Structures are given as structure tokens and as C-alpha cells.
Image 1 (cartoon, rainbow, N blue to C red):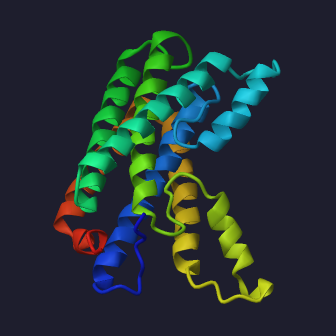
Image 2: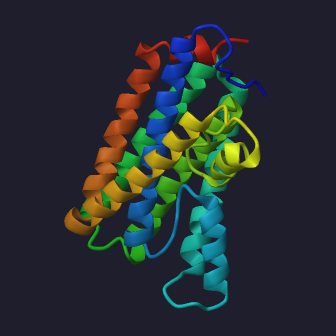
Image 3: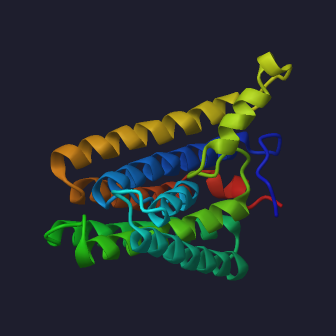
Length: 235
């Protein structure tokens, strides 16, 4: 699996790649804020949190749902399989990213439409349809991002990013060579969660999901129009 390295040529392209991935990290925070608050305590991007929630639900803790959590997990895995097929059959790597984010835009847009039309996304068909659409989209994206293998930029999980930030810091005797991108990833996830929560609380689930779909669509054009392909497609 190739790894994007800032020491490689075309540093501007590398910087564009990082900006795009930070933007996707913000979208993860936004989407999961809507999911957790609006879909009954379930995640569609952060499967670590979803596994823990599944454990809570299995133990009978109130406010959590085994069927909802399992739906998110199973459909996410299906999306990850689809993402793996993309990585196997589509090249170069920039095309994989464009296709994955394009799929994300389409599925999140469909989820926004369902959320706007359904009488409720907290229960019933609307809830499970939105969960499935979002989980599949995030599974595709996570799979493709994993194959890109940009250090500290998973776009959905921050545990290793935070660990690296602390373990490589001067307090631990290190020089933290990627502190900027690590802090940016954490800040982006937090900003996305704040934005998603605020929009959901004041405007419901449809608007924040529509915004997420729109930003994902713009990101596809950003990938193609920037120097990111020059960096991603280096071998």
C-alpha cells in the first residue's frame, strides 16, 4: 500500500491532498452528529463508537438499539467491500478518491431527501433508510481512504491521531513532525460535530445532510481541479 509522503515532489499537491482530507474529516463530524442526535444514538462513520454502542444496546441500556447499530455496522462493511472493489479496479488513485467522494455525495443527498420527507428519522423506515444510506457511503469512503494511506488522516477516527500527537510531542521526547495535520484533523472533526449538532437542533436532519452532500460534491471537483492528483498518483 503506497503512502503519501510530504517529502516527495510536488509539495503543493500534497498540501491540496491534506486540505481535501481535512474537509472530509469535518464532514464526518457533521454526519455523525446528525446520526447520534437524530437517529437514536448510532454512528455511521465512526465504527469504533458504534461497536461500543452496540455493546450498550446488547446489555439493555436504555436509549440504544441493537437493530439500528447492527444495520449501521453491516451496511458500513458492505460499503467498505464496495470501496475495496473500487481500489482494485479503478486507477489511478486520484480517480478512486473522486469516485468514492462522488458516491458519498450521492448517498448523503439521498439520505437528506429521505430525512426531509419522512415523518421521523428517530424511528421506523426513515431511520433505517437514512442509517443505511449514510453507513454505505462512509464504508466506501473509509475503504478508499485506507488505501490512500495518508498518515494521520483517516478522516473518521482520531484515536491514533491523538495518540501520535501526544506520543511524538516534546513532552515525550519527540519532535512531532506531523503536529499540524494532526491538530487540523482534530479541529476539523470537532468543528463538523459542532456544526452538525447546531444545524440538527435548530433545523432538523435534512439541512445538515444536504450541506454535507453539497460539500462532498464540491470536493469531487476540488480533487480534479487541484494538484492533488499529481501527488496521489505518484509511485
